[in-house]
Image (tube, rainbow over all chains, first blue to last red; front, side, top):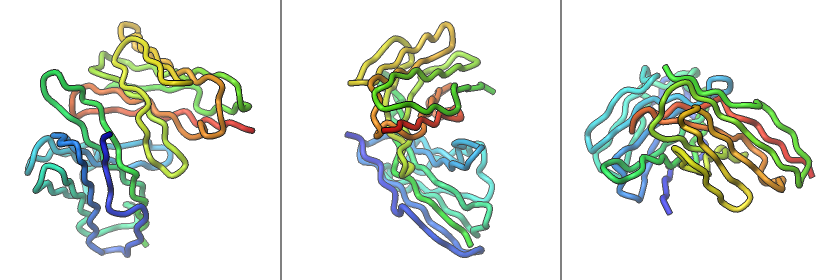
Length: 115
Length: 108
């Protein structure tokens, strides 16, 4: 079974802090994604990565950066947390390439509260 | 961009009842997935179904890609089926769009 893990289920931070959210997958997937989920707005893509050290902006990258130094790990960084970044953050991974499905698998999520 | 519409937005059932959830999408897609979000927020994969019909226990799904819709059937519902069901479509490997979800409540 594919397993995607996230470093924290719940996180409380203060405005202005630098926040790291970590995601690890164990299925050698090329693609990894960070989404945030907010009531009434659904799931929105922040960033994705299709290979080590490669990244692409999603729909709402402002205020975020990402890092992918190893294939299995994808980090989301809030450089200076703000209250409007209080949200549920979901990490996902998927394979890619000929003959492979691009089914996405999600981690358990991190509920971040910024005070 | 592509629109993904799910219906109904809310559904309340008595345990043991059957239900059908619908997902309409406005353009051609590479694949379609159904997820169940449990009360703790985790998205559980139910089906990867770009076309055709699949069954897994009490759940089954059908996607008619040419008519741009997919249906999720839940039979003999249980309280543990409660949660939000999402349909998501992929335009490309890296572009997945989610519907707003159907919130299902199964009462004992």
